Image 1 (cartoon, rainbow, N blue to C red):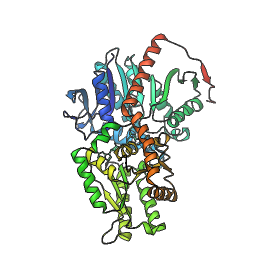
Image 2: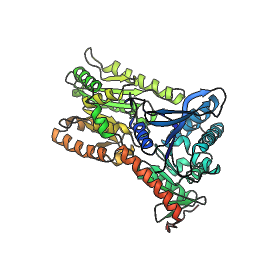
Image 3: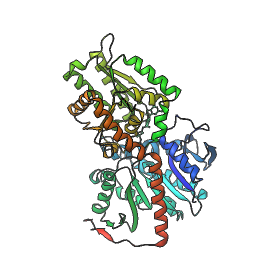
Image 4: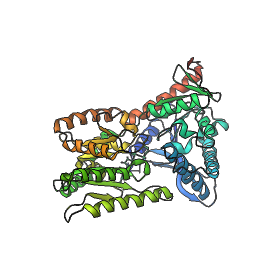
Length: 476
Ligand code: GDG
């Protein structure tokens, strides 16, 4: 069996005892690497005064991890700059927040070249290489330039933007050209894949072939949707752990018979947290009889705090929730519990279980795993209701959720009202259908389908089949 080399910006293998504070993605990657006896390569998260080209190899949780440190300037231009100051907002449709700095683009290319330089000596001819996410789009090209002939796949964890937005990026063609050095490019949904194909056909005059692959820049790649999932059984089991039961019991006690609306997010402007609070305020103003009957627990953990846009959203969230609480709270009722503390996965599972309504209302999101965790966290006999934004990739799979438009306060408020009033039979029916999907399309299914596609691309490439043209060339 071939080895699998996973490359991501950061490397987060489980601790030696399989620490459950890690997310499902880290678990799945670790499992894949154990099965394929591979390596997980990425940035250590540490800075070094001068790039040394040293790789630190360790074995963690049965997985070999290889990490390197980056210089401060690299971190500023590549990570805080191009990845999170340019691509993240642009790919989430926030051109108002997108920073178009040339130095960021140069830093991005430089660090991707460093990744390629460091990785090349570790690669053997039969290895499958799987590159993760927007930080590393040019890595496939950089590896090809250094002579890698391996099957290389890329998976994008965030949306692919509409062609008109992509065109606002200086050197957008260069970025898209880089995608064509991969044999397979994966997206969460057909919507993101179609946005990519639309760019290829209409912006650069590419063509679509009968096997689903696309051709442009003199190269061919296979774009495909691979919806990511969670470790559904593992997550459902966490709520029965000691810490899961303890947090569930604490929540039930502190609910004092009220219904709990729950939001769990990385504190990011794409997640629609401000908009959610304002919709909740609208709900309480329009339906005052709900006051004292319900409350919202919003858990938002800080990330990317070095960037202004993230400091802004932090301050805005605290100010909006403070204002709502200040104007509406009573001596024994607070409408919003605004929590920034990080919880363990077990605690989180217990909190999901105690919630009556899960509010997952991003303005734009590649998939959103919280929606799936909320479902896996529910009790079968008395499940809560998921209110889900139509702009989360998860909405294309989770049709039995109450789908809302997060830009409309009234629509979100209607969704919450409907969720609160939903009879138990309907809640159970919807939950069963959602849980079946979460269990079927879990993170292992995601990993296996991607690796299989990569293996077929490699084997197909060896046979050199030539598929025919399916769609016409765009206007160029
Ligand atoms: C990107 C894409 C895509 C949150 N608070 C705590 C905590 N979390 C965990 C959640 C969940 C994860 O963070 C967030 O996952 P999401 O999928 O919602 O979002 P992103 O971080 O933006 O992830 C996204 C994903 O990649 C995978 O492809 O779905 O669209 O944006 O797992 O549980 N975990 C713990 N304590 C917390 O307080 N332990």
